[in-house]
Length: 120
Image (cartoon, rainbow, N blue to C red; front, top):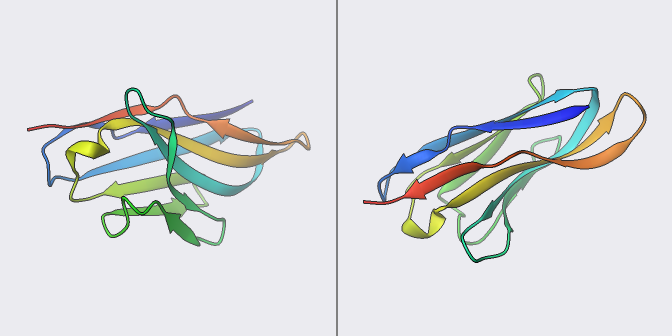
């Protein structure tokens, strides 16, 4: 079994910052790409940022310059530092990872989501 557990969401004022964490655990042999997605009410889930195993990152245009994705391969953890938050960043944020298990299977795994609310 593989689990992804997110933490760090909450309520923040516009212009504020939050740091999300997502830790993968279980029968993991290797993790390739890790990513953060978000889904706002009434909207489709969208990619926020992704990072490869060698820490090459990509970002949605809407968050470039404000968000930073990073990972700690020794802890199987991915982070999302969110600065200069805007009202439109309000969403449930989901962690995603491509994982190769000790049982020889590769698959895409999702966390349960963490709410980020930007409000004054």
